[in-house]
Image (cartoon, rainbow, N blue to C red; front, side):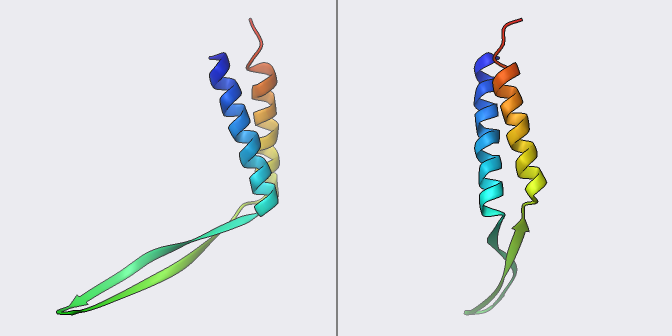
Length: 74
């Protein structure tokens, strides 16, 4: 349990730093595809995901709490 809390805390801290540093990411999504005999038509849409700064700060705070309190013995 101790190791799990530390690993999860570290992942949250790294993810929070990335969220604050990058701020957004985009990916391409295939939405429609039509095949008419030998012809194939595809429509691809680019999606943008904006990561709010409060989510990155919250991830860092929760990750830090898991690193500190999750590793203590009871």
